Amino acid sequence: MIKNFIFDVDRTLVDSYKVELETLREALRIVMNINYDLEIMNQLTILTTEEFFKKIGIDKNSDTMKAINYHWDRLLKEKTPKLFPEIKKLLEYLKETGCFLGIATSRTKEELEELGELLECIKLFNIVITSDLIKEPKPNPESINIIIDKYALNKKETIYIGDSSSDQIASSRAQIKFGFASWENKNEVLNYDYKFESPKDIYKIISEV
Picture 1 (cartoon, rainbow, N blue to C red):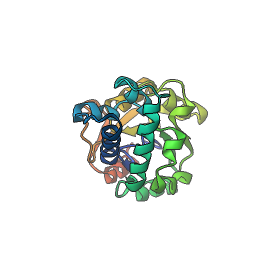
Picture 2: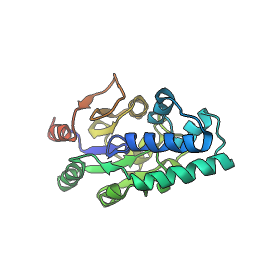
Picture 3: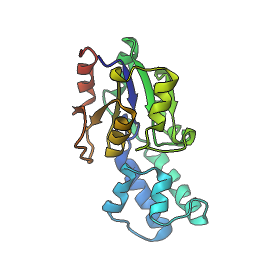
Picture 4: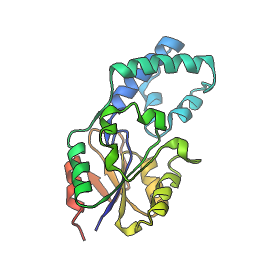
């Protein structure tokens, strides 16, 4: 039986991919005068934002980075990502039935606070681990292991639900089950214990022995 649910945020709880991709691409165009192709932009699905900018050769402390962040923040405020349909109802149900809820995300605390709808549900979670609280991001299992160790969770009763191969690898290294949140995701994750076509599919595993 699965009793402990740890969630990724982007493209799992929050429909952020399209918004982030469009707004960052536009910010890069404004500052760099470059239209980055989708193959490059799709690296956002597996990298933290800091890793992404390093990959395309932009120093995180540079004036260029400050300008990109200014425009990106401005554009994001106009298009705030929303929770996927059924997510709030699912989280409330899991909490009501006594399940453990955690978040392990590549977002920083500051970035998480940009997600208004998610913050309305944040009290439902026992713990939230953001990337600024750890040394090694996913696919390193550090963020997941912190949660497991802090609450002495039974690994056989624990699942991490995310959208990418990075999430899958982190789950495997943490020795827990992985649930692929496939709804509206462009990623193709081949290794998983469960594939969820919709948040509603998660209800099925709660009573599973």
